[in-house]
Image 1 (tube, each protein chain N blue to C red):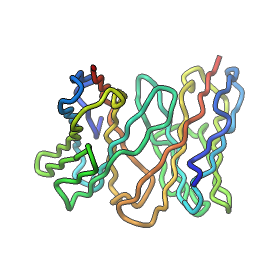
Image 2 (tube, rainbow over the protein chains, first blue to last red):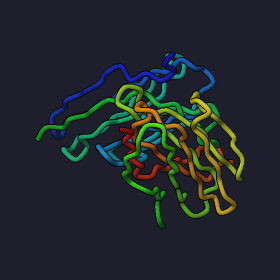
Image 3 (tube, helix red, strand yellow):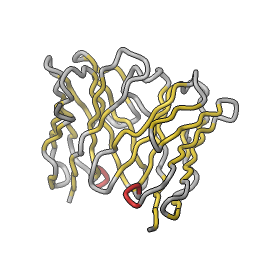
Image 4 (tube, chains in turn purple, red):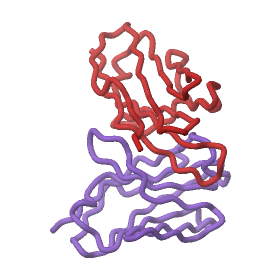
Length: 114
Length: 114
């Protein structure tokens, strides 16, 4: 039973436009969420996180939105750049981020075309 | 500040053998977690160690084990290797004990079982 779902395996966006990556979760105990970016043969790189007490967190070109009632979060990248092309993973934690146990979605491959 | 360091980066083992992977966390980080990434299952949590004690455990057979040393360095061991154990093994570290922690990943160890 997948507790964190990224229903779009891939997404293609034109350079300069907005990329929106979506993530749904089923476990209402999750209270901390993170987004990671991953290139092939490398470890995941942390992008941005959000606590369940917030509904938005912004860091430069990256914004994460959390809708607790819908158990849905999304990552917005504006403007998208070719270097953003990678696999993006959504991850959730039931411990407020205080422990290292993360549940990951299966990822969305983003392609940003020049 | 050095990141999470994993050794070896690549290794090939034969079915039935055992393997030990090593992880050095970011200086000051007390939590070390291990994850397995395969094409079919995505990123799956193996276990987490904090202050030399296993704090969380994922749903993997007993052939997968780990330990943490007093300097927070960690090792994971897989005994009686099977072909399905071929995967990227990722180590992650965090300060832990605090809400809203960022969890940082190493580059991973690529294990191929033949």
